[in-house]
Length: 411
Length: 149
Image (cartoon, rainbow over all chains, first blue to last red; front, side, top):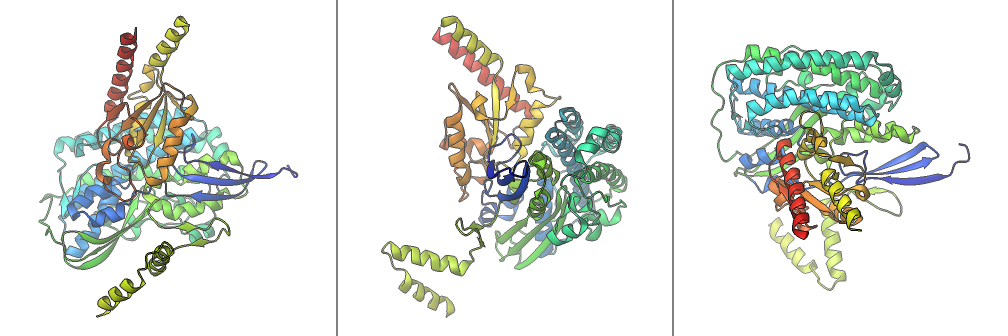
């Protein structure tokens, strides 16, 4: 192994180990990973820009499609910001329903992750088991919201559909099945030798590294960092419900598995409480079509971690700016760190362990200079100067026009 | 030669190998495609097997509007597939651009880049719709073979 040559292999954008298009350039020495370059942006659709061109109501549905797995997270996070700007008091029944849907979404996302993780370590039986059980929660979501994914439940000032007593019973029946199955998964995750041996010591991320790299969600919690927006900065109805923030001190992929599986049990607890306490009252307050001038930041604990939305309004019916910071963007730096000096065979499971969602993440202008390898982020003034120079080289001079325009703006 | 060809066609229709490629989707259609392959819906009972490389695939299942970055890759993947090849567009975005139609980085719809044989609408397309689409595609191939005879 000492004399093994160094070489680089590209993984992605289309690769059997990846569920989404993203590129990794892995520098290897033998089987050992020397460094990883992550190339994002294959999924960049320009949703933030599109949000500025659509009305607030249309944006709810647009932002729901930032990510198909945590769709309720993104739409809730967005309308929380809008509601804050507009100063709307959302009825508590709506807040409880949002919480219930949010937790059902977490269940479906964590079960999905468990299956994918099983698949990545060659344990396909676990994939088939957990995806079969996931159908139970998908059925519940379909009957409450009318769609299996992308629920369209939120509207500015409340929710669009109610949960009636029959649906309540259906949720409780479903939870009973899921709880029993989850106990089985906890047993597998904590006792099955194959899983413990395969996942222990893989993708290690120490507590200090979590704080330094700012990892979020289950990735941070598996390294003993108690970081959960539901408890730290309660939104929706979480302030009135009691639940534990699950942490683990294994700091590796095994710890992340345990955290996610145990979080399922907390989700059942939250849903049961929320259904029991579900207050009577209206579902929605009337929201103005034009949102007054203002700005707000909203945080939401998505299944993958903290999701942040920033909304700035300009008094019209369309937002001035919407910014999305998805949890994977916070965690993807940690992956680079986790993979260093590990073996290539661990790569799929280490990447899968942060539960990446690249469709959430791909939304920034980030240029990389190929020859010198240094990163450069172009800001607006330099991009502006660059475009003037570019046109000048091609025989069109915008310098005078630009000067005139700037004079007019400063006046 | 005739017999060999007949067997190959029969095998292809009875057991199409598919390649799933995310062309910038939001993951919703992707998880529904995987859900269609897992026990509840079990697309494998029609002989459909998910493959990892375009060189093994008969059917390319695409989800999502084509982003500018992925456009070139999609073309390359399509070119790598052996003939005869078929493309299935899953979801509203893959069919016509969906909510992201008109975004600056999106080519809106798979058929703007490569020819598409079957469109499965829905946001996201439910596993039932995906199974229906695939079965209809297979049935249409069978008919085509019969017409040729």
